[in-house]
Image 1 (cartoon, rainbow, N blue to C red):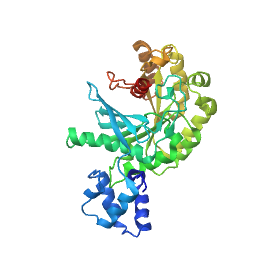
Image 2 (cartoon, one colour):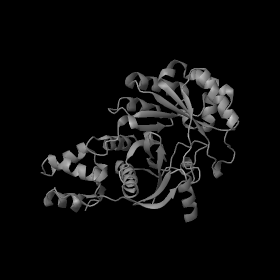
Image 3 (tube, helix red, strand yellow):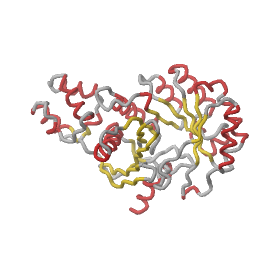
Image 4 (tube, helix red, strand yellow):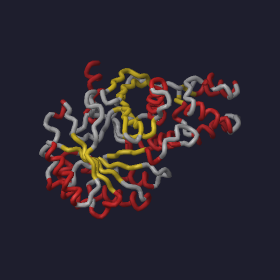
Length: 353
């Protein structure tokens, strides 16, 4: 008896599986629509699929690989979910309400090995990658929550910015993207999906060659190598020059705008000097770049970092704008429910010890 998640399969995988098991090719479309349009959680509910096919599916696949452990609802409508996986590991997923629709932030790994010094997620080392199905299931569980509580509302946007480094789990990431984008399933538009990376340069080149027009965000957080290496270990392997070369390749290949994420750390990276350096760094790609200034969420384990003063953030913003850089100060969500990614998970693990 195989316990593989049915959500691990892309539409192409499911079609191939049907053919390999002497099933009609059109059965893949039938099953796919039951999975992602009607969102059933039992093969027996697929009423237009013949019994032999259903029996074969039930012998080889399962639906549930995680369960909801904790749900927190913020006063602003943000919902944070703590999910427990089949192996006992726990992850976070967040539903955010934006002006443009409902956005879900998904996790791609249990823990993270990138080790950014300001990040709550990186406190806990990587245990394992999530499968494509486990990433897909996060979207489906949030959508079922919406089906039950907000009839008619649907997940319209996805950001891959939860626990883990998405490009360190590249194969499962791309399978997940193909699944949620598929027109006969959840049909979340590629341009409504954003993947964030700390800067694994070889994978940026691969992502540029990927066949979906998915948005790319770069966790930059510093405009020079000395500062970036001091807060982000990955910069020692892929310094800013190599990172920018990869980004320019991505821009040339896709003509898609890149977002640069910049967490504002008091007296660390929030001076006008760093703002000017950042503007200079982006000078030749201003038309295809966008800077997201992020107020820092303090983490108990990182007491040496503080949130930048509002005046410093505004001066930084003004400097970028004066240099023609498109930028925004990120709107915060869920500040009353452990807003920083990884905080809820970290607290639950501490309780368990």
